[in-house]
Image (cartoon, rainbow, N blue to C red; front, side, top):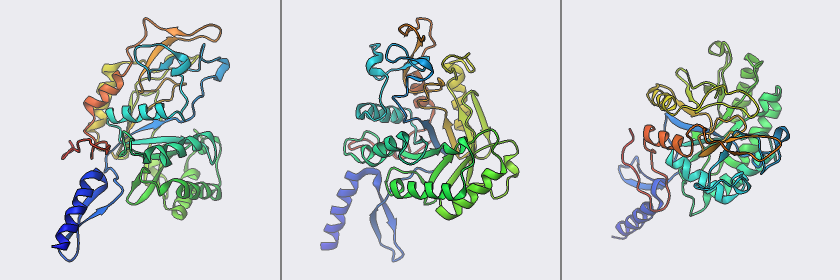
Length: 355
């Protein structure tokens, strides 16, 4: 009787914790409930996230009059207010808005740009992962995070530097339930420069063996023949509408228009929907939306308005601008499969199947 009562109480706690609890068969033939860190299963629907704002004044701009993008983020639909919509990545209201929109878009993994220990991208990531993601009112507890190691694009970090950074990441973040793990290993994506090739693969193979990370390197010409390959590969090329690196990854992009430059990939919701549909059908592990909020290059799916940009006067809404708002979020919501275990938020309904 006492054991039955204990089991009932555990079950009640399990229902309140949602996806953080599972029923695990034991060798003795009895079942018991164990709390675990929810991790999504492959394929992974992910996006690249940039936590470096306020980074709006590059290239001679003077925000909020004008700024380093052909778009204005739209956290306040119905108004055009650069003074408040040019956001700070550390603003909790903005983080909650981004979490809600990622849940709407059925994004499972956010890959956050990381430029090194105590860099502003590191400090913002720490606030999001170690603080916001653990709050009881977090709208999307089941979102999982990984880091995008950007330092490889600036040179060729020695193995000792890579291991030092990976151990730092492990100490600071990997014990958080919001950090993505595959096969029990924390995941890290690695950006690169056009000159990187076999030497990069070798250095990361050595670092991976020491730090025990699941490593996803960026592809290069001939990457398929690399010795000591990483756990997986990806392409970062948001000037392309779509591209597959079979059997590893598939990317889609809503557009590419860097401030001050020509449009390299025009905004086209029909073409984007077709690309997302192809991504869903692709037999790959990583399904990547490039990007969530890289505003300088104009590759974001995060809600926004197109503007007529300037460096001398006030930027203004473009009456002939491409349809944006939250339409890219809606495409993802309509085409991507349901979240594997829902949002994990208190009171949210958990799905029983995944398409």
